[in-house]
Image (cartoon, rainbow, N blue to C red; front, side, top):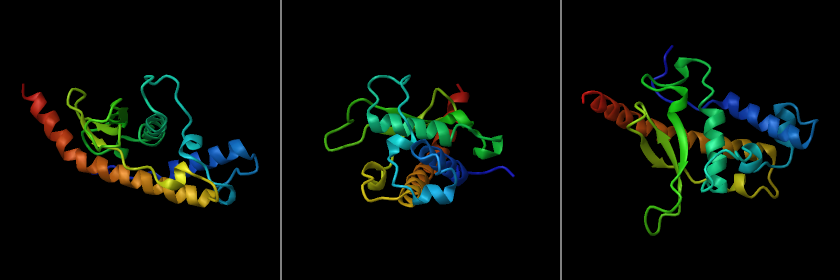
Length: 172
């Protein structure tokens, strides 16, 4: 069945958690064991991609890797809403804040037509993914799910805009 919206892929998130926990402790090779381990940071879950532009900050880089690992490896076309592909979701770093008072430089980037992208600020990263002292793998799992759910909510808000821009662009 074709999906009409982006959906969180909890199975992928759990795989990422187990792999990151296992890098730290080879015995943390199951989800149950990983949840008992000390908490993992966003940067341990999504290690830096050295191929991104230099202006990508630490958080933007990790969020780009997250999008690459969670949204791009679509198993089937049905993983994405109609009009979108696995490559339609990106994270970009705008380098400098767009206006005074805005703290964010990381934005979700969605397109149905590559020439007509739509941007929206990435959600705030949960504190449990930034400061892991006293946290567990289960805390990491809950925080990661929350972050991805909010990303999905924002992507789904963008879907009709991206589709409308794509349709308008095709009429020229």
